[in-house]
Length: 436
Image 1 (tube, rainbow, N blue to C red):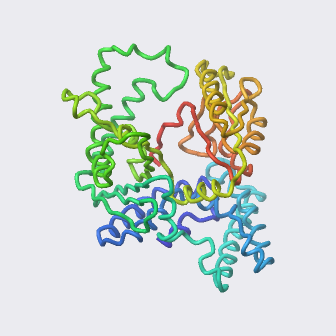
Image 2 (cartoon, rainbow, N blue to C red):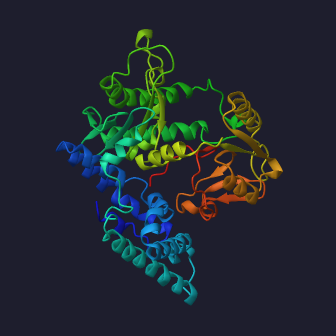
Image 3 (cartoon, helix red, strand yellow):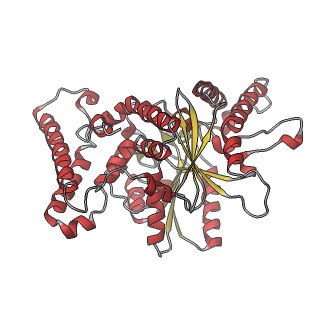
């Protein structure tokens, strides 16, 4: 697993690094499966974390606070900050292969500068880690740190491998990692489930906002077959994954009050399936009708590190958070989204009722790229209700359609969003998975 930083190298552009992810993704899953087979659950947990959100983790490291280093070794800290900032900028450039243009002198110089910065960054990190007290500086977190992510409820990591499938449970207040075997689950089943789901969503235009009037009537002759496919997928996820996990954790008992909160950290093909909605919906025996949300409130996290950061920010903040909601009912060149009006009103009413946050909204012609970027920088949470575009060949070109054009991920990445909270994407294609 230590070779991952060399394969997904900081000296490559973000697009180039994303293209290498499939080559290391399976390595992490298979390594974790072997560690689980040997009952080395802490190591499996660490390897799964290292194999998740690799490019995002690298970017987070470039923005990491280094107060302790600054106090003890200010010159090293200053150089590290300078190199990190420049690396962040140069990493967003378009690679020569993807630009389709001849590599001119200036581009070649940028390419060489990028490589030098990455090499220098690694050299500085090695020097820092050789200093007393800084041996683990910005290294991947150990299992003893990762288990602290479970504060609001259990966290379940599900490892999907061609060799075996397992769940690792982290329980609040415990430093032990609980292993839950999933012997009935096979990765091939998830592949077929993903294919079925993709086909059903495409046939019903469920991926697209604003197309309700274009959809086929719900009682279309083909509808029972599509409904059956949905049910098969949700039952499979319940029987093979959710039920064994909830049963082992004794979360199937009915209780008064709000259900417990459970966070899923999924891998492989499972990341493309609606685990939060699984269960039995139409069984003849009504006593067997049960859905996961009858027992727990599910949420997801891409990594345990993301939860650790969120927990740390929540404990450090005593200020009432601010929410900006972006609503695009009518976007030039796109179909109308009339429900965004009601959506933003609902959010505003909820915030006003609970009085736990400040609320502002930017709508219609006021939703320009620059206005939205500024609002994202000055507010803690952002809710986007608009059309979106997903580019499977270049993630930087994905983005959100605003009044004056596409606000791309590449443009968003160039801004600083330190210590921010939730970004909720209520847009078309945001639930669309990619095979990468």
